[in-house]
Image (cartoon, rainbow, N blue to C red; front, side, top):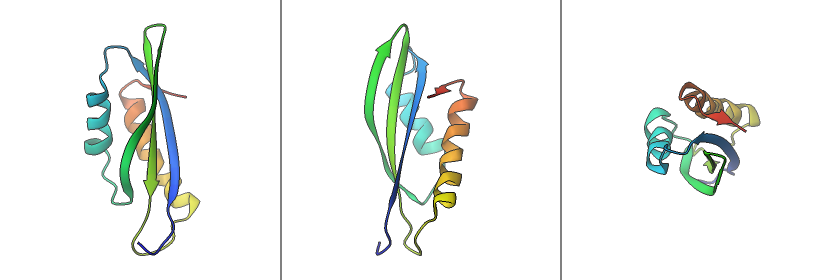
Length: 90
């Protein structure tokens, strides 16, 4: 794309029995966004029976430069999916 990209990260706690595969499936199947390019896991650590994952997203359009509001609206979809699963956004 000729237009610049924006990045956002999301970090959240899950119970220790939730696998990275389940989280990745949620990312790829539950939220459909043509603006997200390959969400990537950038961090993971365990503490007191929980696991924290951090993912980084790159948002980019082939039609225009995205505004912060547009990117934030896209991220809200991810927040909602994780909250519905009972995951704690941090």
